[in-house]
Every structure is written in C-alpha cells, then in structure tokens.
Image 1: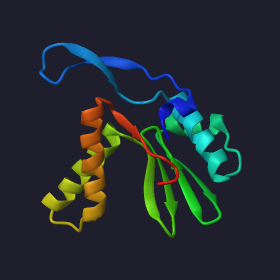
Image 2 (image 1 turned 90 degrees about the horizontal axis):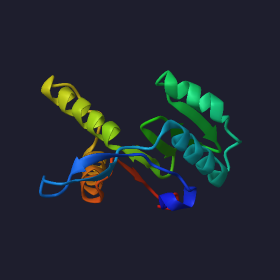
Image 3 (image 1 turned 135 degrees about the vertical axis):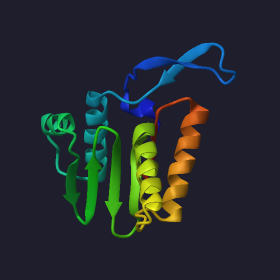
Length: 149
C-alpha cells in the first residue's frame, strides 16, 4: 500500500546525497501517531475489532508491542514495525523501520558470535537484507508493504 493511501505526513531530516556532497531530504520513520493511524487502518482492513489508539500509544511509550488476535491471525504493532502473523503464510511485515531491521540483524550476528543457535533462517535474513537495500535506494528509514502480498 502506498503511503499516500493513508494520507500521512512524514518528518524529514537531512542526509548526504549519493555522492556524499549535498544534503537531501531523508525520511527516518513515521511519527508515533502516524504509526497508530496506520495500525488502525490495517486493523479495519483485516477485520480486527477496533483497536484503541490511546492504548497503542501508551504501550509505544513503554516500548511494548501491542498484539491483537483475530481468526487465527496475530497483528504485532510497535513503534518500529507492524507485522502480521498467520498460520498459513507465516510472519510478514506491513511496516518496517531501518532501526528494527538493523537491530534484528545485529542480534542475529551476536548469537552467531557466541556460538548459540540463531533464531533467523536464511529466508528471513534475505528479507531483512532486501528491505535495507530498498531503504537505501529509496533514501528512507522505513518501508511499507501491501496487505495483499
């Protein structure tokens, strides 16, 4: 789903362009209230019961994900990601930030260094790498994915 569909305003900072000289707009991530609006919109489209925007914002401030369940589906809402978990299609992101993707990959590499069993499989690692590459190309700090993918 393109962001225009949600009619959201993103804030921008400045980042070097591809040659590293000039500064150009670089969208870091959505504001918390924009993430909440996106989550409420997704809940409506997926048929979840209406979620309380105030509760989601309060949990975001405490850095806790909000987890909603409906007909075998689970929706994870956090400041840095919104993900849909389904028994048939698995786990997929609807909103993902660079911060979350990099943190997850760092944790994975840390587990490998400590010779512990990694949590992520090769398919998930490829998803994070592709997402980070897309963010670099689009000069954004986040991605949104369509619901019907």
